[in-house]
Structure formats: C-alpha cells, structure tokens
Image 1: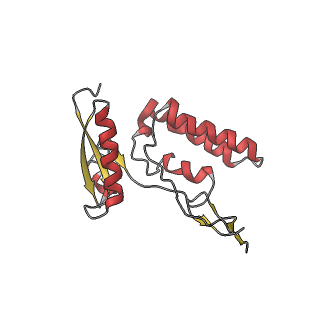
Image 2: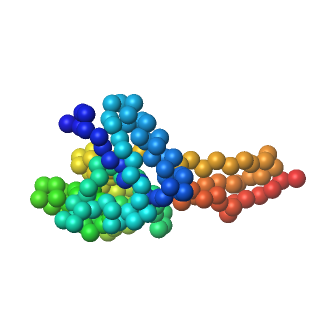
Image 3: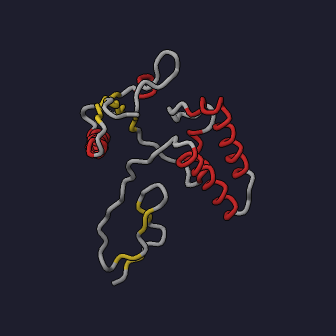
Length: 172
C-alpha cells in the first residue's frame, strides 16, 4: 500500500552529527532500490518531533540509536512495554491486547531462574515484535573492528560493543 507515496524517515541527530545521517542516507538508498521514495528529516528534539499533538506518530520511519543498560534481554525489550519509548503505536493493536500479551511474556521471563527457559521466553517476546506484530525491523547494527598484534591474546568484544581486556595477556 505504499507504492508511490513518499515516506518520511525521522533521524535523531543534527546536520553536524554525521553517523546517523550517513546511516539514514544508506537506509534511504536501500529502500529506494526497491521502489520506495524516502525523504529524510533530521531533528535534535526527537521525542517531541516524532509525535503530533494527539500523541500519534507523524513519520513513517525513524532512526534512533538505542542500547541496553546491562546485558540482559529484558532491558533490550523494555522500550516496547506499555508506556515505553517505542514510538510505534503498537499499543493500539488489537485494542491494546497485543502489548498486554507481550508484557505477560516479559513478566514470565523475569520470573524464571533457569537461563535456558529465560532465553526461550525472551526469544518468544522477540518473535512477537518481529514476526507477529512487525513492530520493529532492525535496519543497522554496527560492527566493531580492531587491530590486534600476534602477541596479544584474550582481547574481545562485550555485549555493549566495547573492547574487553579482562583476559588480556601478552606473550613475548
């Protein structure tokens, strides 16, 4: 149903903050390659500019960096809970039943102690977002690149995309 309609892509950032604008431009080119027209709109006041006076989103797409406070699935899924800053209006789906169903799965995961059961429960919540309700489609995930000498061992990358030095050793 989008054929011929120009979509707006709201980007959090400013004209001088190039990473988001570069990513948004790449997303625009990818979407245009499949026939979708996209207009970029950048803002430094994302939370106010994404919603209209009645509380509904006024842009078709948005690009905003988000991350976890700590490495646990619950914190990555929190923005999609009722009252979260998801900016998707999915709280209106099925008269609110969809988001309540999602919250119930998150509550179930939070009450589990066994890691395998937690993983399956949070994977179910993720499938609800990505497959059942199509609330979020990840378009970009940065890679961390680093150069390591042969004599450096144990250098890694943690879940927050930072280099880890915990098991770092240097051989002569």
